[in-house]
Length: 496
Image (tube, rainbow, N blue to C red):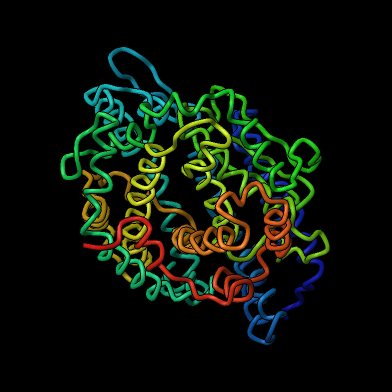
């Protein structure tokens, strides 16, 4: 064990998570301009020393059953922390630059993070291109060198622990066959290829952007924004519709003292919605940044899925099962709630809308996203392999992403678009898992399951499990089923 006391380690780890998560919340929610993580890592540096990580690895190898699972979760946490500690200066530098840098377009200064909002709301394709070009120039010149330093530090840490690179490391840490997952998602790509254009092109046209094959990545935020649906998604109905939906499941959002909803606009607030979890289940923040239209509802409901999952975890569970584990589980509940905003019956219930156009739009967007993430997984497996040719990877990124989406994809995002620790695998498996949950809810509690207190009780039972089990195990235990990307393909665009 190398002198590592597991109970003391767990206590220190939980305190570190609380401090770091709260710091990220304060910065990304726009309460403070700087992300100050170095001091947090300094206070908890003993958690992430290389010999401690190695001792945890040995401890995992010595155990079996549930104890081996808990120790693997701790090892995953410790290795992520080791990498985080060694890249903390890059984290702070990137966060500070993203919050402070501005781009110049037609004499107007726009904050780097606000470009995403501008792209979503800008009707002119030419101006969108100019905005994106200006942002990509900043990314290439100012941010990518920092991203590269952090990536090389991560690779070095993998080598130090005896892994050939991030691919081998996170296959072991997540206990996932990442290559096997890539084969499944490649089959998804093939299954949806024939109807991809017929599903997506009509929605691109409604957004006023070019069809597949001519559309640029700069046009996608406008496509996702779907301004033609604004009349069906009135901003003043956002929070009430969530409260009413939760009430139908016998959940009183206002009475949840452990949940804080933060939907206020702030100049430096991240345009990406998020859920922050300093203490599970005692201290949960639900944060969204208004952009307009259905995207606001999707973001709010997605993060509400995370929020309710974490807020209902059994507080008696071990730290590992409350905070760590397979995030495909929590993402599946986030996608489940997000899917309501494209469900015609829910739209009729809560917004008085017909919902047909919103449903078609959501299907198209989801199909683009899942295909994009399938390509991201293939790319990240190569990038994280034993000996990638880094000089060739930007064009490889452009090729794989562009090929799967049929969108003109910029090579400049080849590092900026890589999520830490193969989180791409969590998203992909969560999309597949959500189809199982939604089908079960409809079969057991009816088409309008969100109006059923019994459905709420069923979900709370699932949520109380935290992430003790991984996605595949939870599905097998709950429904006796295997994760099936074929269901997702059939729903989104299967067939010829």
